[in-house]
Length: 177
View 1 (cartoon, helix red, strand yellow):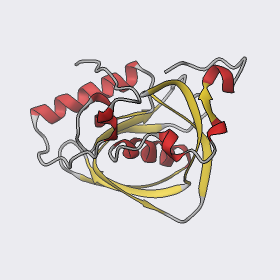
View 2 (tube, rainbow, N blue to C red; view 1 turned 180 degrees about the vertical axis):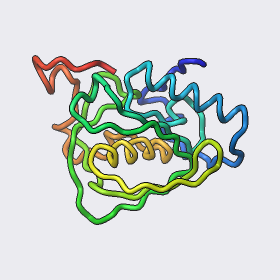
View 3 (tube, rainbow, N blue to C red; view 1 turned 60 degrees about the horizontal axis):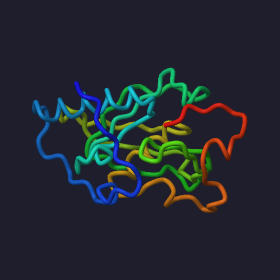
View 4 (cartoon, one colour; view 1 turned 90 degrees about the vertical axis):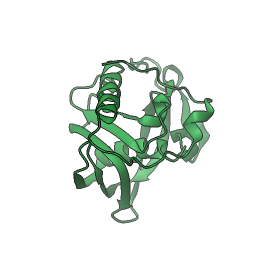
């Protein structure tokens, strides 16, 4: 397994539309997924999208067990989600602070749908569907935005709520991305 280099905001590859995965259960896809999971875990990320490592495929991984970057959130099981479809379950949105491995050391207050249904496929091509809310819903929306060339600052309503962790939360020790 390999820990991949995560692209940083400003790299034009982060702004591209990802292509649908066509072939499942291949050695190449399994290797990519393993490297993405290893990279996400090594960097204490809640998730990682393939475009963040320069791969233009509709593939995200996410997981939150015990994560120092998110100490007070509910656990999210390791999930590999390919060719995702997200459907909001209602109009209710919630604002919360987000960070991103592609925007290290910064946070922004981002509105997201509070509840949603997501569907897609796992690495073997088996279909999956879940209804989620709260932090789980936020993570899925954040990661899937990467597949459409959207970074979380593009969703912030008021840029006064975007900045460096050390300036936004003085005296509060945050794990720097």
